[in-house]
Image (tube, rainbow, N blue to C red):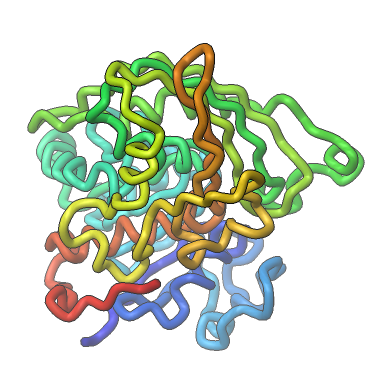
Length: 361
């Protein structure tokens, strides 16, 4: 099967680099265009990028010439790692020009015709693309993935919707890579916890309701959920750990909830996509897990690790959940979203060999 050339917007930034790293040797996609700011345009990628991940940029991508953000692009599928301000107008322009934009930016997440997609829990929201195209009169599309901190929260809650989730309180401990590069100054984060991240708490609360909601054929009906979030920054490189308390209308046994998590796989087709983990939720029995350093790379960084489920005297249940913030919470989720788009026929003439999909462990 011939691979589909894709473009990466914001290719020199930290999330853009993660896209390029994860797309190296991808069975369906290959990076054909790298796009960045005016100061990088015209340079070889290897000259423009300050590579902050392990190793070096893939050699094939290193020799690509960086294109300017306001240029024209050949790739149908575009991954966006743009900052919010740049994404606000440029992603709309690209979708209007016929491109499929899978974005990690927050600019369009809460638009009522943009899917806020996490394939294991709301693959049916993909049908919102047809509403978007009809309403906006374009052949392209914008598909968003969520804030990186809400990812472990909604992944853990999704299998429990059948019990009637009534209320949630979450307290996050977020890695410094979530602030991008160079991120938080060392004199602020070393020997410290910062109990405030601008704009983060409202995002977590609103995005969770939308992602866990139901598509009625025209719009997303948000889950009726009373949720409160506190977000903090901690001196950890990668991995967002969230302590969650929840109330359930039904009162399942703790053992039943654990089995729901362990048996959760997502809807048909999703588990077979190349980037999907074999087990999207992993429950750890050790009393001191999950831990970012030990568990963030579960499922190649795409699984959510859960532990410490126990009674809560106020809400009923409490536990801890962990996801890798730049893989599952950012670039990896956008790539998984694009794989679902391809499998569902949204990428033009490109059709992967769905019957030959191989599950990645």
